[in-house]
Length: 445
Image 1 (cartoon, rainbow, N blue to C red):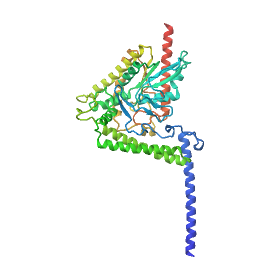
Image 2 (image 1 turned 120 degrees about the vertical axis):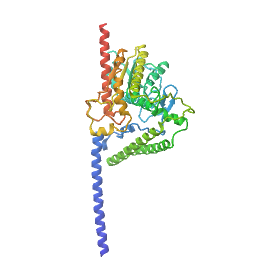
Image 3 (image 1 turned 90 degrees about the vertical axis):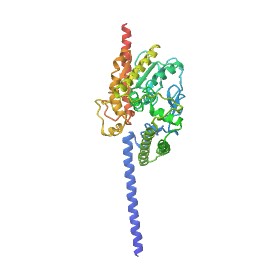
Image 4 (image 1 turned 30 degrees about the vertical axis):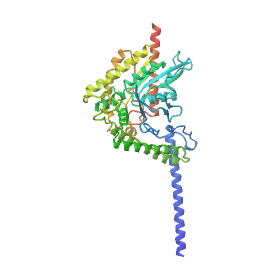
């Protein structure tokens, strides 16, 4: 009899437990549905299926989903390029020169009404180029001009993460020598010229050399001299990358909102760990060899670290001169050149950051903050000289001042979708305004 009562109590307990579990799952699903709607602005069960990994709601900025941990390759003219091959964005590839583009270069016009816009700079410029190909914000503004309303606009990106002057200048001249036609050029830079050049200086590497963050790991690989810690970080990056790819695959296959929510948190945590491993790798691999006499790669070195005032003045001078020469070579063919100084969170403006964005956009340990705080004023002092040389400047440092929503996706310099919209519209409006004024001046003559 006691055994029967025990069994009945056990069954009752199991029943209550199952009911509670079912209620928990229901509430978890309802909560996940709300979370998904807030995040994606659509209902989970009637959602549009993500066409690519970047649309899954995971911040993949800076994550290289290919098999290689180091995807840069030495280039004898450019310093380094991205390894040519597929890209995770539909319609794009790392083309024959490693630029993220739908086309191989040099691109030849296939129709007489095509209008080619070349975009130069670092990763922010590369992101801008991708966004423009997808959304055609600049063409929308240019079509307001009578002479351009019937043009078919082709956006070509000659920008890659880590590029800084004089790389843009060298790349422009290289492709012009190969016969690349350009009808307009937009050069977006500033951050790399001070932030990455400052790292060069601190490691006694010539300021005009390519970024040591990119060159020294390649040099170490070429010399077979990566440290044990750097190799361990490489292994961790590779293993984590496999987990991220598998997590993204699982995320696409989720049938329930709760699955999407839990998997998203899991994958985002993997991404955060990936970024930490990358920082460790860069820290260990970006150490110049004390004796590079046996190196197969030659890098110009300085005898000592320059004082900040001297170094940043030279950085600004390199930046300005390179832009002037880009303008000179383009003006010889009557190609309009627009130089955009990109916004960055470490250059203080009137913008008020929300607490959530502060956690993403700022890092007290970053070496970039001081470089931008000293470097941007040095660049701004060169504006008068640039304008004297007839360069059309678009100063975008204040572009986010009136934007209340978050625009930064990392503690470096990159923008989210909302940021790209604001930035691209500002650049488009500024270029249209200049061209209209130039058109008006021409009519008066």
